[in-house]
Length: 545
Image (cartoon, rainbow, N blue to C red; front, side):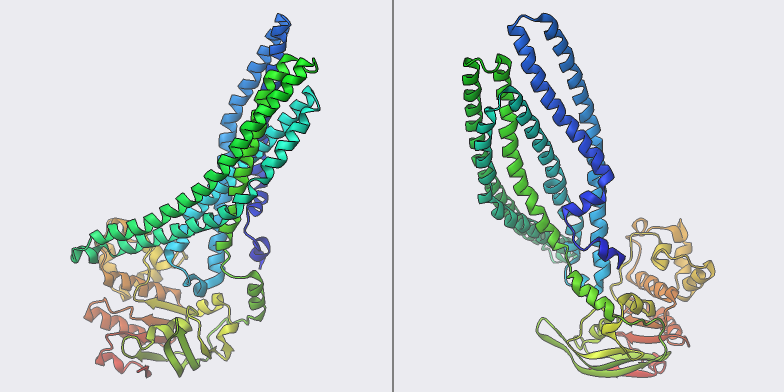
């Protein structure tokens, strides 16, 4: 619950305050930049006045001061570059961390509601969008706001009446962007969604490369990717059109306002109310104010779109999570039995399982048989907490599955499926998933699952990464790694979902014989190869037909 208290809302504000030390340093150098802009304008105005007055000494002093300010400005560019990148990267890392924590916290049920490519887009493209439209835009906005404040101070020092002209155009330029803001928010979210679709299409197309190649249909890659690319392009162009409309209106207003300020300061000069240097600098400072307002309002419109992107990361309502957490009951040890009571599962309006009933007793061995599409894998995933049941109940030692935390559930169940993922890490990592295990246990697993000869023949042994041998590892070897991994977890319940089908017949028989003979293991087994010689090893065969 500690995480929830810190991460109830994911917003830009959350990360700005979380990384406040780095952001404070970043803000300091932004301030120095605006100060340099202000001092350049003020001292330039005074320098021009000294020229008119033929005051050489003062002119030389001011020239030296201007040089010093510009040297400080050069230093600021270097320091700000470092500080901004450090702060932004720190915040982006925190966002990635929170997204991963949310995925972890919500478990398999919510994870399965989206494609892998969608999550990939969240952790890459969407964070890049947050960086560009959020953090980098915020830097510009702060800089523009500070420049405007310093410019207003400058005009006040020239003559107070100049503030009235500034105020009139300020009100106008603040209100004009409201016409475009809501449209930009919607279109920003739209193009991130289209980007997700593009990433998904690319992933899907490239994953099917071999099949398309065998069918001489590789042109389908280009057709599909281009189709989604065009949709994404249109969404970005649409956003740019709206943004372009905003910029046109803002820049037009800015040009008119600068002319108005020049006219106003000129009138004041002719009335001997301000020096000539102030007239010259009025153009400089008015361009800062109104160009800054143009940029500030446009950037703010972009900036607001970012929180819409953050809303995509809200997988579930935090309140509902809290309520669910309260109801959870501990299930620390599998003692007696697992019961499936009148379980019905529907998916997208299609009935997968209807009123299914059976019991799984501790340390017994069960096979589930049935034709393709009969729901064998579905019920296994429901037992493992990956699929919601529509009706009925699943009990673990008389505790309803709805009241068991997934973390507790997965401490009791090892699940091995046909398509278990093998990480692009070392073989050792794929066996242990980073846990520290005794060498003797690992050695035994290598022998039991016929991996020793293969591993011994590799140059780096267990430390060999899958990227080194990606072309040489077979489906059968991958399945044996997955089974060895489950064996090393030493959990009381072992679910095997067609995870031996790619292993050659002799090894498959020996592995299955061992797994079904372990006295302290409850095994639930599904396979297309339910050989007659292993049927006798099961305590019960459950038929779903």
